Length: 234
Image (cartoon, rainbow, N blue to C red; front, side, top):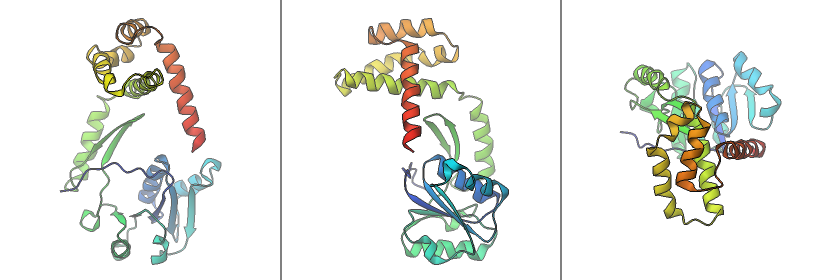
């Protein structure tokens, strides 16, 4: 049984051992979560090489072209082993365990102290699907099935709720008073209104629940500005 947890790895140094397609996908996910990633391998896939050439990743992705060394773990928060060499994968795991580090070995849950779920992302919504390593194929199948249920409206909905929450706090509303307001927005199908792109209905709902000063277009603009500031701070 695994303990489910979401890790904040922003600005943390993470290591990927391996240079193939699996390593590329692992590195990409770490970078999406704003980690500082080092990949060590004698050879690198075309995808990793292209990623490393992007100016936007110049300070967050480093490729080291040589075999893995135990000292590569020094100063790292976590390591992911993604090689096709079972002996090397076990060595990475043993080195990580000796340092009490977080360690994942791709597709070998028996030598992991954490495993990576199949993920659906819609903006700030993250749905993780895990079979505790019993059937990654089923986790992938279920993810594809759920992707059809959870569309892009969920990302927009959460962005809207975020700026509403911030605006309420700026107006010195007590945080405990927010819960019934958000529950009313949810129960009155704000999500469906966003999916149907019905700004008039959204504005009526916002006005009835939150009062004047809450308009859909203005809140969307505030959410976009918030997203731009977050991207520039990375």
